[in-house]
Image (cartoon, rainbow, N blue to C red; front, side, top):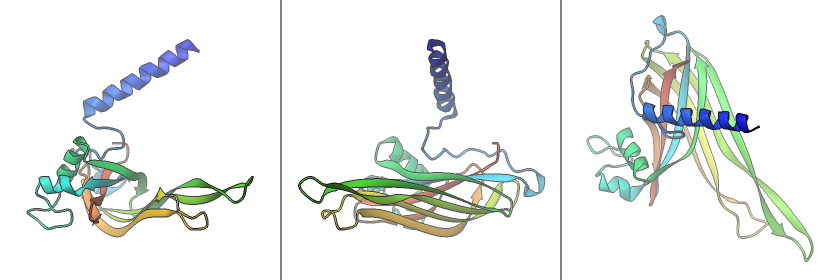
Length: 211
């Protein structure tokens, strides 16, 4: 048992060192890098990562960029990564899906939260609320280094319990559906929303399968 636990610990250390050397962290959008490319003719499968990132508006204001503005003051992936590094942003959702050329795939994650409430002196009940992610994806290779993707992404999170046990739970939700051209290995902002305090971005990154 001790030898097995020691082996697991060593494997974990090796994985962490590998991630460190690659300059990437788990659950964080990857830094831009050159992709290996698709096989000749754009064939093969494409893996697409999606990250939902929430960024504090004051942090973007300090960088003098606009969350939903136009160039030259538009926010970039580099700005979002900078905010993540300084603790002014966080990843609140994400998914990963692979698709063959001209194919389509969908992944879905559902989470259920049970909220406890009292109905009498000695009776306790629980009310379920579901939340999670849904990511659907279609891929059309344009070259060995670029693909066109049609995507639909929805993210719902439980904000807090309702004040009344008979009322619904409060949730935050985002739904994005569009298309974009992605260069392999290059994170790209494909959608964004903002309110008075924060901006929420959807980032997509495409990779050749097996890269």
